[in-house]
Image 1 (cartoon, helix red, strand yellow):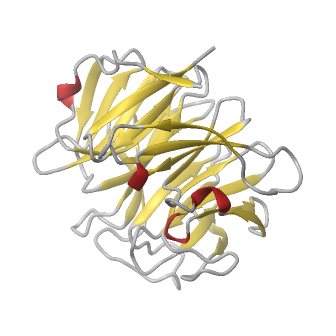
Image 2 (cartoon, helix red, strand yellow):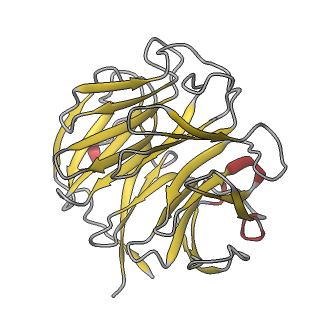
Length: 295
């Protein structure tokens, strides 16, 4: 279903750290990459053609997840920071040029789930055009939860504790939404995807049979919402699952896979909702690769 775009990026040498996350601004044709390392720019910006444009570094310590929000009036870049220094344990909003606009959480302080906006290694964020925010908080810290915030950063609902039961998590690692009002969470160490109602937070179902070999690290829908693309880091694979329409979640069905090279270690992915291209942030290979759909 996909082929590798070997010409993206034009100059791979701009990747100088470990590439943990990628986000596509399909409206403006931009690709944002979050990387980690000493004395490396933490955010790199490329064109969708693969040309390096610019980078920024301020107040980003250890990026884990990244998300681009376009509204009618402006664009912004959201980053989850799992660092343990003075900028860490936060969710931050930046302008496209890297100006810090908003901080959620207390920088440098890990917190328990008793306080909604006290994060401990928040893994990923998804923001709706309305401004409603979904955060999976728990890349190995004390929190294992899914949190929905309003556009003025008030808690709407919060679900999840550490465990293996329904609605519990062991490292909720990635979050996305479908057009039918459902929130999809990669429950990484439980080797399953769990699904919730976006209005109420009610549990709707889970998929585990597709993940016996390795848990899901990343969840993103294809541009037509017919498929769910899931990164499986330990077996260096992208799984392409059939997405259920309105109604029952049912069981997962693996339609296809993209097998990556050994030790590539795909961590998080994003999809260009215009072209359908899939971008994969690979920790092991220390690069982002672009896969384009076969017409």
